[in-house]
Length: 247
Image (cartoon, rainbow, N blue to C red; front, side, top):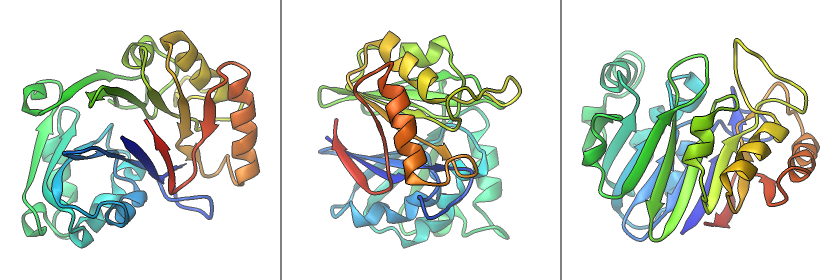
């Protein structure tokens, strides 16, 4: 499987990237984690029409604003959106007039599901758990084609993040804060805490994403985060927009 980092910023777009969105290219499906502005690039990497499965961690705008661009995408046979409790009501309010084109007007059918109660609607193995953030936020673990990918977006260090990442081939974790930064009211990871999760989980690789746009203003600052993370977990790397890696 190929993983494409379509957006790696948190909060807002800058010269370092679009807001957070990750594509997993599998044989049968287009699998997407979060829908920041990076989502508009998905059809640059998806030539074949396949069912698409979009996993939304929560509803902060930097994770859903890219839904406004769905109308340009032609590589989805059908879009299945899975998110936390309340997803139907929230998404049908925001992705609708007067804010955006409604789901019913998109060039492909769309269904919205809520986790964990509609877990059985998925055609491949997925686990979801709540993470440590300012609002309900889900982390995800997918097991497909013999590979495990864990996605732990906006969160502080927590046991659920470790559980989701157990022996994962790739852990995709946020890194909004720099070394030494933390907040009880607004939990996020820094390079060391992201690396700690990867090490304790026994993950094979760690990709750092969701770099806070006001904190990480240059790629060199991201490289420093990578260096710091590697002191705890050697197979860590700072992702950039349009970077592709094998899972």
